[in-house]
Length: 354
Ligand SMILES: NC(=O)c1ccc[n+]([C@@H]2O[C@H](COP(=O)([O-])OP(=O)(O)OC[C@H]3O[C@@H](n4cnc5c(N)ncnc54)[C@H](O)[C@@H]3O)[C@@H](O)[C@H]2O)c1
Ligand SMILES: [Zn+2]
Image (cartoon, rainbow, N blue to C red; front, side, top):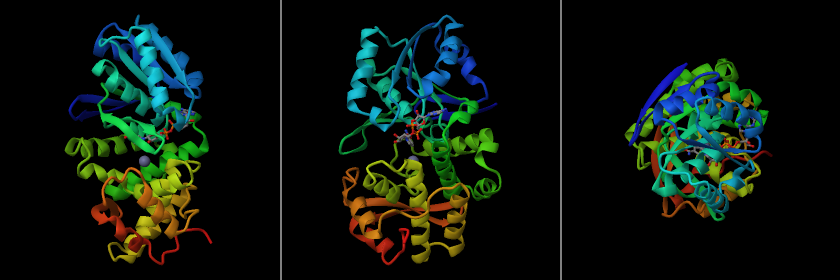
C-alpha cells in the first residue's frame, strides 16, 4: 500500500492498494460518518466492480444510491450533467452525503463537476479504474464536462476528499485503454524524471502498477501544490498535448486521447531537435519507448493539417499558446508561442506516415 498526501486547497490522501474497493465503506465512514454514498459509474465498470463497492459501503451501514451512465466521452456532456443533477435532487442527496466516482477519467471529471456544483459543492471520492485516471485525472481537482465546440469548456477546480486507487481493477482494461494510459505515464518520465523513463523502457507498466502510479501521482502532487489553478508549472502536464489535441480533434475523437498524446510527444521531441533545443538522442529515446508500448509515433495527418487544427482548437482563446518542449529526457521547458509561429515548429518535418 502507498499513501500520498496531496496538499492543495484541500488536503487529502491518494491511497494505492490492491483490494481497496472492499475497504471503501470503512474509509468513507472514517472521513464523513454515516451518510448516503452515491456511486456514479459507467456501464462497463459498474458490472465489473459495482457489486463489490455496493457491498463494501453497505457493510458499514451507508445508504447507497447508484447512477450508471453510458461509457465513453459522450457522457461528459451538459445533458448527462443535468441528468446527474436531477438524480441527486430527486433522491434528496444533501451536503452531508458523498459522491463516489467509480470509473475512468470520463466518470471522474463528470462526477467531480457534479460534486463541485450540486448544492454549491458536496464531497466526492475518486475511485479511478483506468490507468489514465489513476495517474492523472483522479488527482488534482480538475473537473469538467465538454461542449460541442470543445472539450472541458465547462468545469471547475474542485479537489476530492479521497482518491482510492485499486490497481487490481486495471487487469480488466482493454489493450487500447491500457496503452493509452501508458502514453500519459511515459509523459511523466519525459517531463521530469529520467530514471523513471528508463525504468519504463525496461519493465512494462503492468508489471509494476503500484510503483508506477505512486511515482506519477507524487509528481502530479508536487506540480499541483505549486500551481493548483494551472497558471504556470501545471502546464508542463500538457507535454505532447498541443499537437496531440489537434490530432484528436481532427480525427473527430476516433483516435484515443492517449494515442494522440503519444504522437504529440514524438512530434514535439523531433521539433525540439530541429530547433536545437535538445539532442537527437532525446527524440530517438521517445520514439523507441513509444514503439515498445505499441503506441503510434506518426500522425495520420500532415504538418499543415495539424497546424490548422491547432489554430482552430476552440480552447485557444488567445493568440498565444504554451508549448511544452523537451530539453532532455526528464527536463522540459514551457515556451510561450504566438499562434502564427506554430507552423514554423513543424516546417518541413515528416510527421505523417508516408
Ligand atoms: N481531470 C484531469 O485532470 C484529466 C486529466 C487527463 C484526462 N482527463 C479526462 O479523462 C478522460 C479520459 O479518461 P479515460 O482514458 O480513463 O477514459 P474513460 O473514462 O472513457 O475510460 C476508457 C474506457 O475504459 C472503460 N473502463 C474503465 N475502467 C475499466 C476497467 N477497470 N476495466 C474495463 N474497462 C474499463 C470505460 O468504460 C471506457 O469505455 C477524458 O475526458 C479527459 O479529458 C482529465
Ligand atoms: Zn492527457
